[in-house]
Image (cartoon, rainbow, N blue to C red; front, side, top):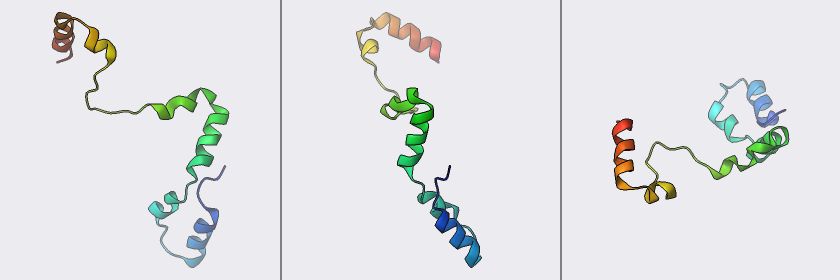
Amino acid sequence: MSYISRFELIKAIIIGVHLNQAQLISTVDRKKVLNKIYKNEPELQDIGKFFITDNPIEEENWSKMPGKDKEKILRKSN
């Protein structure tokens, strides 16, 4: 399973230059990696629909919750 350009890796080794990791990583075929993941772990196909953040996000259920319950939750989380 090869995701970086073998040609770029071999070229860097033959020329004897210091391997530029950022450049080699930029040659990664993202689609090839994702296809392999989805083939082995099909349940992960929807993972791209989510994102992780530390920023607050208001959820629909939160907006429907009574104010006193929100206050309780916020007090416990601090």
